[in-house]
Image 1 (cartoon, rainbow, N blue to C red):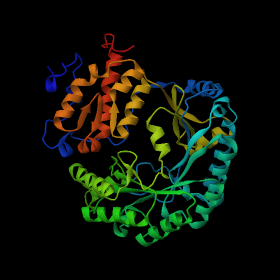
Image 2 (cartoon, rainbow, N blue to C red; image 1 turned 45 degrees about the vertical axis):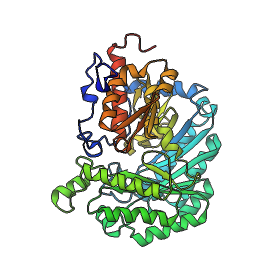
Image 3 (cartoon, rainbow, N blue to C red; image 1 turned 60 degrees about the vertical axis):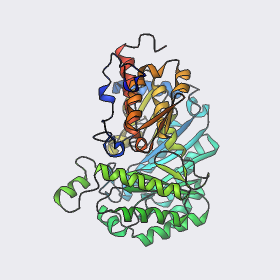
Image 4 (cartoon, helix red, strand yellow; image 1 turned 90 degrees about the vertical axis):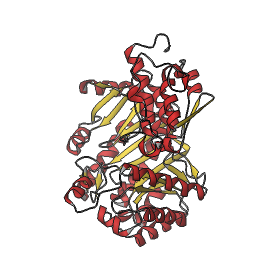
Amino acid sequence: MGANGRYAMNCTDDRRFLANKTDDPLHEAFDSKIAIHAMPRGESIRPEALPGLWADVMAAADGLPIRSIYIHIPFCEDHCLFCGFYKNAYRSDLAEQYVEALVQEMELTAGAPFLNARPFQAVYFGGGTPTALPAKSLARLVSTVHRLFPLSNDCEITVEGRIYNCDKEKIEAALRAGTNRFSMGVQTFDTRIRKSLGRRAPREKVIESLTYLRDLGSAVAIIDLIYGLPDQSPEIWEEDIKTFFGLRLDGCDLYQLNVFKGGLLEKAVSKGSLPAPATLKEQADYYVQGVALMEAAHYHRLSVTHWARFSRERNLYNLFSRGRSDCVPLGSGAGGWLGNYFFFVEGSLKKYLNAIKARRKPLAFGLKRSQRDFLFRDISYQMELGYCDLNELAERHKMNLLTILGPIIAQWEKVGLVNLTDGCLYLTRPGEFWAVNLAQMLIDRLQEDSLSGSHRGRWS
């Protein structure tokens, strides 16, 4: 018999999916933590096949009911030490060329049957730093989306930005063009830590700008805060969260610091110019501290990392991207799932601009959906919300999930990561901290079972 005596171990060796045997699951359940959200493995597509597949998808007048648009702005005025997504230094002449090309890409894409089959419920301008663009350029891009694409009446249109280059002119221009949500990367309000990481605006400027955005009342305003930063203490972390409370903004993400291998932060720590960031165990304590503060202040939880003050904040794009939805990628470095394929737009600015001049979609690589991909995305989406309804998913996908996953879940339950009640898996507080690990393990175990042919009738 397996753990708890309820399930027998499968012919597939489940041991690598089990947690460490410990009485302290928050700190010791796993030796490392996955940095990105859970996802299944896909099959690579030959580059020469990408244009034809893109054309086929665009020609189909159908698609999933939930759909979004992701637009990438690949410029930053500074390379912040903690960031692993920096691509290009901002230059006004290059940004002007890019905006012109991006509008052309939108125009090349618009009008396709797929694009007009259903309205889009979310549009996200990410980066990079969208607010690095001039006010006129930012407004032009948002207006172009409104002009070219069918949007739902309640479409969430988000512009990501940073305080330093998001002045009143840019905010007002973006609002006039149709932006209804701003996501500002604050990370911390502590001026000393901000400067050590490459953030220029001091605490007072951050608070002033966010207060202005809030008082306009024209758009949802949310921020990101990061725990585990170098020189950050539990007291500073608590002060950051309480400063957010005082600002009465619409929402906040509490993110764990990820130290990217070979990145600027790792190099700074190795040279001794910055102290080491928090250990994984210390980050777990920051996580619990942050959740406790949010709950005590009666904020509504939208995911394991995201909190809302009122129902005005919905966090649609981020939630859609975890689950079963279509996402149209636009701009250099953008990616998204459409139909059965993932398409990634050329990350090289030079190649991107040349492709647009030739009036073709600048696709760099792609993936084909794996078998049972929608099941895996349902798991990723639900785990992001703190649960996984195995009975509901089993009925939807016509398979007995507990036959395959039962031994693993029983062991997780014994360790204290989850509770299984009436066929629904609920994350404990330690389970929430390790949510991405758990989701990825569920996906890997099911995908392994599917690919190995060991299902013996469990997959229909």
